[in-house]
Image 1 (cartoon, rainbow, N blue to C red):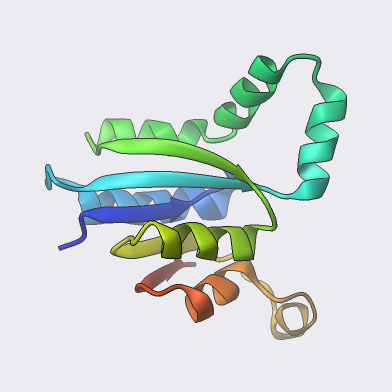
Image 2: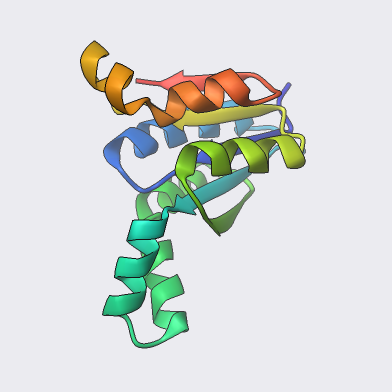
Length: 139
C-alpha cells in the first residue's frame, strides 16, 4: 500500500507515537521504507553548535534524540533511513516530502489548543495543508 513513508520526528513523545503508526504501515512489507526526517530549526541549530566542539559529536547527539524512534523501527523489522535537515520544521518537511515523492507523511500532533494553534500555527497543520501526498496526523 505505502512503499515510501516519510516520518517527521524530533524524538518527542508525540513523534514516538507517530513512529508506531509509521511502523504499522510498513510492517511486513519488504518494499516499504520509512525515511525518518528530523528538521533542526535555526535556534536549535545555533544552540547545538555553541554547545558542541565537534561536528561528529553534534551529529551523534541529534541521532540520539531519535533513539526511541530507531528502537521501534528495529523491533518491528522495518527498513528505515534517517535524514537530518536544517530549517523551520513545517516548510522543511513539506519541501522534503514534495521533492522526494513520498506515498504518505506521518507526523505527530503536539495537541495545541485552539488559541495556541491559531496564534502559533502547528507544524502538522502546515504539513497537511501543503504536502502533495496523504498526511497521517497522530494524536
